[in-house]
Image 1: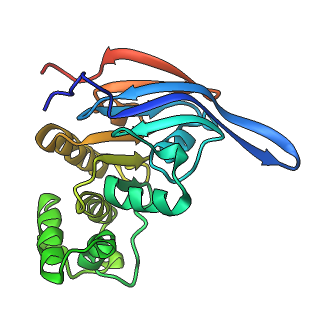
Image 2: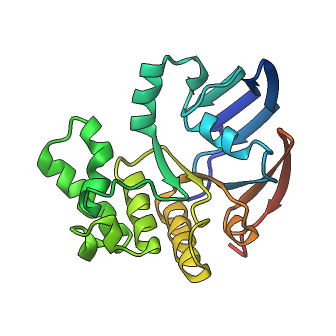
Length: 238
């Protein structure tokens, strides 16, 4: 699916984020402007402390900016209350983390089902959604297993299924291959590419790994809280 250039799905405008530590104001992001179009797969790269995870968390509605705006699907999420932001995240964002963030006392099925417990779906509908998401990541035969019974790659695929199960507008991935070996990381990146190419999902991924970044269609560099865009298309031939 090609990205629509009519209007950006994500529009970050003059975004600033600072933290106060010991009475000192520490700027993390300064005057960031960024447009991401529906169906894009972008990678955010930069050295440690450059602000890339902070930017990802702001786009995902996990954190709130000091100033500036973040419009996603026409909604300025920077202006939402904490309760409104929680509802917005539940309806619009799928999260993939480096360390999976699975609940160890829940099966793969139950972990994937968690985001659906915030919806009005019936138990039967939830079951259908979970089974479809697990099938997409080829883990139907592991749905009754607990995280400690799964490999790292399988746990990350459960996390991807959990991110997908609500059919979110946006998928955010923070170092999704950072805890995986090379072969397993490649399998996870193959899956992200499939979600982008076949389902047209909009994906924003933070990574230190150039090989992971090369799977994205656009690379954005952050240096000391300032974006340095790279307009080169990273994909191979269409």
